[in-house]
Image (cartoon, rainbow, N blue to C red; front, top):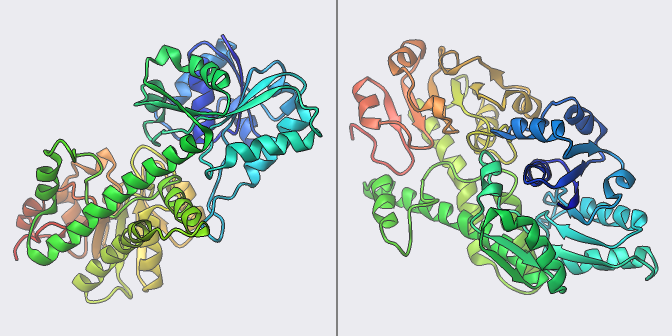
Length: 436
C-alpha cells in the first residue's frame, strides 16, 4: 500500500484522503488551518457530507488516516502528494491560484526524496507545467526527481464518498506516462475506466465537463421560461427530451439554477481563459446570464403575486445550494433572500444543515426550527432547496400557519394542482399555473 499526503481538507481533500485510507493506503491529510485540523483530530467534521464521518473515524482508529499542519510530517516518506486546495474565483473571474502556489512552494522547500505530485484541485489549463516550474525554480534545478500528474476530481457534494468509490472514470494527465500509471495503480481496486492523457487535456476535461452540465441546466431553464409564455409544461418537455438516448434525462430539471463551489467558478474561469486567448465564449456567457436571471425571475413572481414586497414576510425553505450539504456558496436561496431583503421584505428561513453559515452571510435572516415555523404568518412561501423532508409536507398545517396563500415551488417538487385545490396560489418554474 502507498504512503499518500493530501494537502487541503476541504470537500475534495478530506474525501480523497479518507477514501484512499479506506482502500488500505496510509494517508496524512494536511491543512494550514490549525482550527480545522484540531477539529478533525477531535473527531469533529468541518463539513457536512453524508457517510464521511463514519469512514473518517474507522480509518483513524485503524491507524491509516491522520491529520497534521506540518508539511515535514505529511511529506515524510510520501510517494504521492495530492494538492487539493481551494481555487476560488478572483475578481476578474480567473481562478485564484495563491493556495496552489503556496502548496507547490512549500512542497519544494521540504522535498528530500522522489515523489509524484498530483493536482487534484480544479486548476486552469497549464497549471501542471506551472507547478513543475515552481518546484524546479525553488530548488535551483537540484530538486530530487519528481513528476506532476493532473487528476481532476468529479465529486458531487452530498454524494462525494460514493462518487469517489464508484467513479464514472478516472482522468490522469502527465508528460510522464510511468508517473500517471503509478497514480492509476492507486485507483485500480475501484475497477473504473482510467483515461491517461497529457497534462493540459486532463485539466481541460474537468472544465469542459462542468461547463457542459451547467449548460444543460441553463438550457432547460430557458426552455422553462419559454414554456411559461406558451402554456407548455417544462417537466413533461424534459421527460420527453430525456427519452431520447442521445440526450438522456440527467440535469434537465428546471428550477432556480445551479450554484455551489464548482459550476459557478469553473464556468467563469473557462470563459476567462477563452477571453484572454482571443476566443469569444458566447455560449458560456449566456449560460451564466440565464442562471443568474432564474433567481430574479423567482423574486419577480412573488413580487407580482403580492403586489409588492415592502413590508411583506416571506418564508424560505432551504438555504444550501443543493440538498445533503451545508454549503451555501453561490446558493440561489441566498441570492433570493438578499433580493427580498433589499426590496423591504422580512425573510424567515429554515434549512436542515446550512442555518449557521447562512446567518453569518446574511445576519438579517430570521431562522426558524422547522418548515412549519417558517410558514408562520408569512405572505408567501418559497421552496429554494429540494431537501427530502420538504417533499411531503403537511400542507393543511402550512396553510393554517400562513397569513397569505402564495407558494413558489422553485424546484417543481410539489403537485401544483393539488395545492391550488387546497386554496393556495401556486407558482412553479416553467409549469402552467393551476387555475389559469
